[in-house]
Length: 211
Image (cartoon, rainbow, N blue to C red; front, side, top):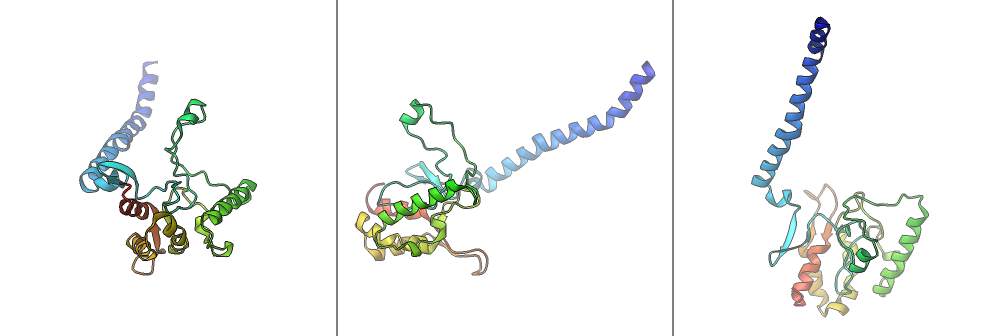
């Protein structure tokens, strides 16, 4: 019996040592090292690329969010409302907790068609100078992650006529705001130009005296 126990220990010793070593390395050393490196060298990115106004986080440079006021530019459909809920929803137990994952509908899902059609009607009502054929796809569809905050320059420009009315700002001022928040594709080759909607709306809010 003693020999059997010793034999079993000899067989399990190496796998056990490997398991404990990997647990220590991957479960403690690696996460702690990456956390320290992130906080020391990349604190802005490591803490969520948060945009601060008066020492208060108003959003993330990387996460989309909904803007309901008519004087704000609208972003693309997003799962970025993961941290928003009303007091009534919480009281009615409709709030299921925060989420930060994509909830995109599949292309064959009939609910996607209903949602897009409803969004188109809302958008055209809010932007009466825009025709259906002029609406870019990105304004009606979520990104792959469902969280991206960016829209195309075309998606931004077609909203400017309505923003002129609701913000009281001139078209030239709004065009400059969009230009200030447009990121060009890398080396004019990689990716595509995009506009950060949160950046645009923060500038609009400042000029309107909202913040």
